Image (cartoon, rainbow, N blue to C red; front, side, top):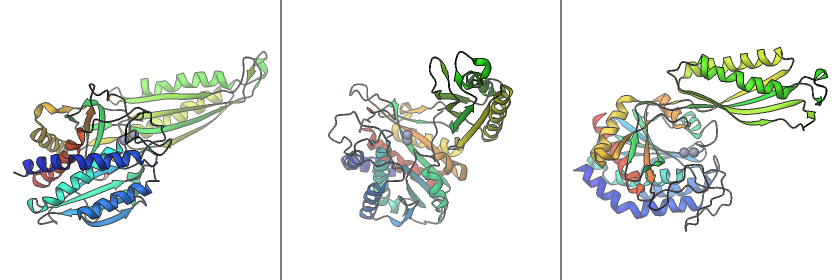
Length: 396
Ligand SMILES: [Zn+2]
Ligand SMILES: [Zn+2]
């Protein structure tokens, strides 16, 4: 049976996938600078013998694995390759050798897993019908997102996939398990940059000033009504301000205050309305208090929606592969992910690979200096991806 064949190939390949992951982990590169990573991936793809390797978005690749009757249907598998500006605090043999750069989001694991899946799929290509498209993308971590450049560069054309599957490590799920969610899953994320301008001076003479600190305090509170009153209670929304900069002193009121925050939600029309609402409240409130406001909203990734049918088929295939008890239902996750761009173009399924192991002390969250994965997850990372692809070609 093909499933058993894929399982045994994944087992045989485990050490190789781990070695590839360690190489990538030790040599991380920041978003859009994945030059050595791209060379490495290209070399591996050539060794595997996949066809039509094409460079996309400068440091990304697409490639094909054609089964029998390749025109029947195409399923895409996606991995991201970039690392983060974090100083690694783990003392492991594969610790980052690039000071200040770290694979702290598991993109090394995604890339190594997809290379493993590619090797598996290439060796069984006489046993399935259709085509698998491999997508290795740059720049997931930095707006506007490598996925958007990949799409502009034609990653979803020639052939256009019927669906796309992506996996991401999840340090809250134990190794051996995976998680799926149908429908809305991850949030859109927009960056907010506000400057409130007033008239600074001596703190003892407020009547001669326009105090931007007081105005900003009101503004931060007032903007919360966007998520508490204007938002439908049925649509999750988050508005958080993490930076407020007023460079005055006990007795000095500054001329201006800078505020930075994030707005996240799971509905595109509401997202646009919320932007207008925030701009309107800020202008009305700040001008009403005698100040002026600059309010810049930098749009980030759209929200991520998993196609219900594709995701249901993938969930069933995963249960078949790993056992019912090892496939979990995921909750909504208010982080953002540029896989959302693909899922707005074609049917998508973004699922989570469990990498947690409390016994081994592997518990740190993504984007932290102590993040790591239990590498036992990589056998599933490669094998399950391959199995999901052939299952979708067969059943989708
Ligand atoms: Zn990340
Ligand atoms: Zn990530």
